[in-house]
Length: 277
Image 1: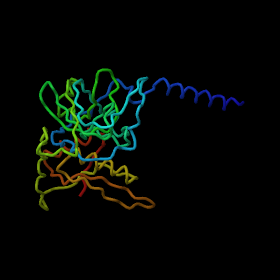
Image 2: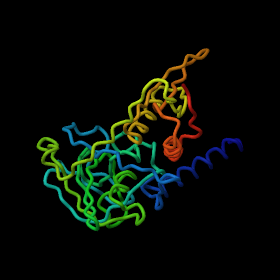
Image 3: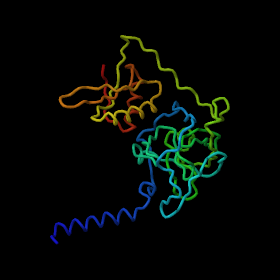
Image 4: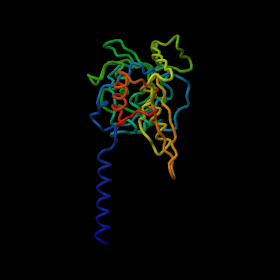
């Protein structure tokens, strides 16, 4: 056997052992973090419960993580539990959730060990009475004593980012019987966008130009959640041999609010947004 082939086999074995020693993958991460600058998510609406089929991914039962076995409920109806909530953010932002969706820390979502995916729950911070409705589309948390892992946005609305955890009550919502009028949480409607008239100095912020339309759509969805009240558009640009998909936010006015919008976009990981007509 040649030395090159032997070295390749040794490296492959090391990689395999490393993967086995870190069973649980991203669930084994102890420390997570939010955006580099605080993002105002006060206008991000609660998840709206609706009847959905169980996702093809994330509902295998039983399943094992970090040496423990978990069973998925046949239905979340009637589920209510008190315990400790945690939150997860940028380490997982943009990665796949257990049911195959893309995790967006600015959306109202959560991870739970045993509720069917997707599910909807109301989470109440027992320390301050704040409530949110989130859509459960991921598995976790797999640290002892925690009942739910909330997105950055949900944790912010519950005012638990600083502490990292909070004592909460989690109650499942039956989408078939849920209605806005009977909901315990009534989300404040997003502020109406400022009326724009031609010639008043308004332009668009270009966040990025992507070679794949699917990447542009993911960015569009993330920014729309983060910046309600603004239009997030995709503008194709034909280049020799390819198409660039430009993602733009606006219209924006050339005033003091522009700096805040740019700061929020940069905090989400989009570098150097710039003005375009």
